[in-house]
Length: 240
Image 1 (cartoon, rainbow, N blue to C red):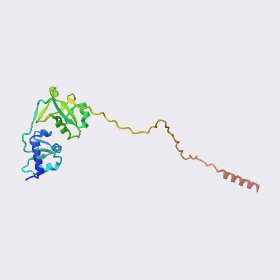
Image 2 (image 1 turned 45 degrees about the vertical axis):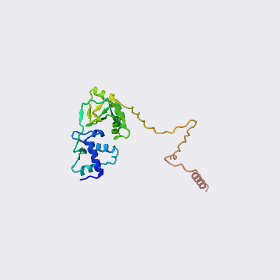
Image 3 (image 1 turned 60 degrees about the horizontal axis):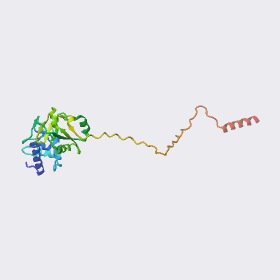
Image 4 (image 1 turned 180 degrees about the horizontal axis):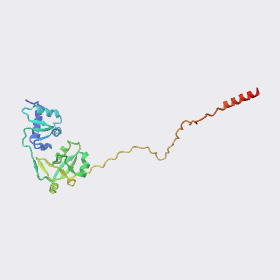
C-alpha cells in the first residue's frame, strides 16, 4: 500500500534514525534493536521540520506499510529491516572530555552525589557540548551542562562503552570527575507581612466594649415609688 507523502517521508526518517544512525539522534537501541516509543517521539519532535509528529502518525506508519517495516510491542518501537546499526563497544577508551546536560531540578543532587543512571538504564554521554545540550533540551528547556573528565575516570577504573560515533555509555560517574556551575542557593519561603509602626508614630489602643451588666440572682430590689405608695396607704388607714 502506498503511503501518503507525509507518512512516506516519516517512514524514511525512522528508517535512517533506527536502522542506520541512532547515535546521531542520541538514541541507544537494545540488543534486539528496540527502543521505548516515547524516546523515538521525543527525538523526532525536536528535529527541525518534524515537530508536527504525533503518536498516531507513528501508529499509521506501523500499520499501513506493506510489507511491514516497523513494529511496536509493549510500547517499544523497532525497525524490522535494520541496516548497519551501531553496537556497544565495552571497554573502549573515551576521549579526554565528554558532556551531559541535566534538568535544573537535578542540579543540586548531582552537585552533591555525582551522576548515577536509573535502574535498568545508562548515562548517555556526548562527544560534543552541542549534542549534550540537544539531548538535554528534550527534558528541560534550559538544561545544565556538565563536563566529564572521562579519561581520568577511565584511568581510575570506571568502565565506558562506545556507541556509534557520537555517544559513550556509563552507569555512574563520581562527583570528583564532574565540572559544572554551582547550584543556586535554596530560596527561603517569604515570611507573612506584619504591619510595623513607622518612626514618629504611636498606636492607640481602644478599650474593648464591656458586655451587658451581670444580673444578680435572688429577690429583685423594689422600686422607690412602690415603697412610697405603700407607706402612704398605711398612713391613710391609721387616720381613718
